[in-house]
Image 1 (tube, helix red, strand yellow):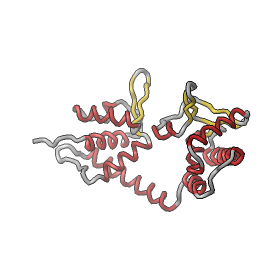
Image 2 (tube, rainbow, N blue to C red):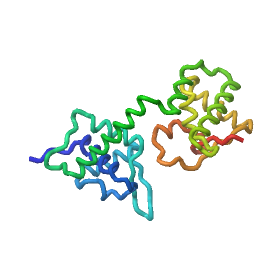
Image 3 (cartoon, rainbow, N blue to C red):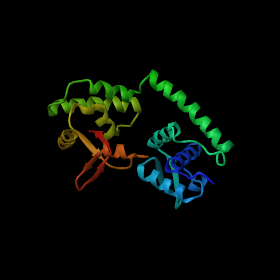
Image 4 (cartoon, one colour):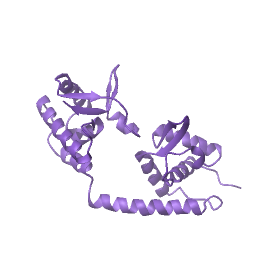
Length: 221
């Protein structure tokens, strides 16, 4: 009797197949095995933000997001995941080898040298709380300038990056209120537009204005 395809197995296989395609975004026929379990897994991954979907010339095209890479890592390292002898082939095996080779190198690098954004966030979180508007404005502009320089953001700095860099030095609500006040004082402009391959957590850490949509970027005036 054939082994039952579990959600863990289906999602991990889909993510691995898609990740291994260097020419993503691609059509689902290129990476989704046939079967109801895989169809349901694709829909779940898209809903969770692990896979991005966009219309290209009228057809859906898919790509693995950063969250999807984490989900893939969790799946491959899960003790309950394992390839069945009747399904795995050379293509899948080589994709696994490629994933472990690449990610072993990346993880070693990350352990040796934290990213600039992580270092900035760590430093901010270790500092004292922000209790006044003036202190907040000073911190926002300093963080804005640093991120803009480090990541070549062309004066459009994602709000989620600033929020994360400041960390828990003040509440989310206070961050929102004072950021609006900085805009009201004509010192910055909060801008919408598109945030490529935005993940649910990045969307949450952006800025939703009641009745006015979501703002993704800060532009200093």
